[in-house]
Amino acid sequence: MKLDLPLAHPVARATMLCAVLALCGWLLYLVLCDFMVGALTDERIRMTADTSPASFITAPFNDDRVGVHPDVVAAAARYLPNSPRLHMRLAEYQRYREKDQWDFARYHAKQAIRLSPHDYRPRLQLAAIELSREDVHAAEQSVRAALQLAPGNLEAHWQLGSLLLSKGDLAGSLEAFRVAASGHEAYFLAALKLVWDASGENADAVRAITPDSPKERIGLAQFLLEQSRPLESAAVFRQIDHDALLGDRKSSHYLNSLIAAGHFALARDLWCGLRRWGSEAPEETTNLMWNGGFESGILVDFAQFDWSIRTSGYARTSIDGQTAHSGRRSLRVDFVGRDTTRLEEEIRQLTLVRPGTRYRLHYYVKTEGLSAPEGPRVVLFGTSSREWIAASDPAPAGSNGWQQRTLEFAASSPALTVAIQQRPRFSYEEPTRGTVWFDDFEVREIHAR
Image 1 (cartoon, rainbow, N blue to C red):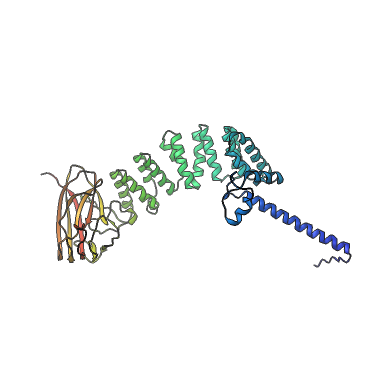
Image 2 (image 1 turned 135 degrees about the vertical axis):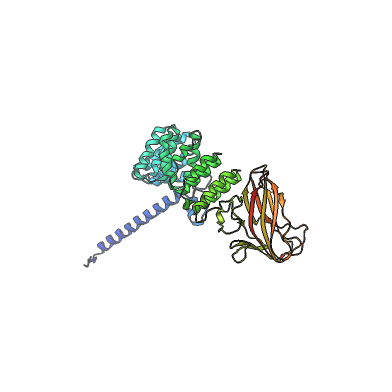
């Protein structure tokens, strides 16, 4: 289909040209107005009276975040009174000024609502302004109106929960906080603190706002531990799905926090629960050390009461599946030949004991081509000090078959660390070379006869 408009007469041509120019001018005007409104309402640029009036033009081009002057925004709002964005910008600015400006903030928020009746944001602005004016009832109405427009908005649920809490309606605020917490971790952590304080440190109240996802449940357990509620915290932790716990490093951090707070037995119980549910069961013996023969795989993030093996610049540590005193595997340490060799806590295990009780530690050691000023030894130290409680003789130099070593000691704390260490006696020592194997660690109580 072809539309042919003959414009042979000069008047017709002039009329068409004027119409085209008018349309282009109108479009240019709309574009310029939209640019001006966008520049003045850019959330990345703050509104401040300490900037020049022209900054709103230069800021988008030179990435200058000095700010936009409020008088410029007010002038633009008078020139473009039907722009809801300008009214929202002014309402947000005046909301944080002196009390005599709150009426102006309220006016601009209501204008934004009138101009954009299906936008929930100005209703939330109005709710915040009404709350500043201590009109809690009006604020609640505005928030509920915003929720009708955007029922899934997290900020609206958060504001509703805060409003109900300020009214003393703790029970009513819990569901609103729970919805907000389910969508963003920041809301969840903030809600925990608010509800904890408002409820008089009621653990059931913070449980009620915690979503059912494992991530938030771990966060609740961590929060209760930080509030010195270890038993309630552990109860929450036990209810979380086992696979979810093993798949989230926050659960490892939680166990570390329990240990750091001195709750060794509780941490050990939860840790053993994780290992019992896994593919490998704990050793059901009187040996207090876990995995003393290195037969079980070590979970790197969950080695709280297993062997913790870290890298060292002086030696390569590995699990040897070809050499063992008993079973199939042993711990192998290959020294790389650096001078002044030092091993501190690269190889260690935390073990629970009973204070005032005597124990005996057995283990086996084997060497091959070991050359050292003084070889590595097995040492025991407490949780509050790195001073040795007891230490074995150094591993024998040269090449030697499996030898049993024994240490006896009295426990003075509820937990101790068994470590393989090598400390130089002087600022410079000859390099350590060769290989050492360790196997079959056992810590047993010495029973009086």
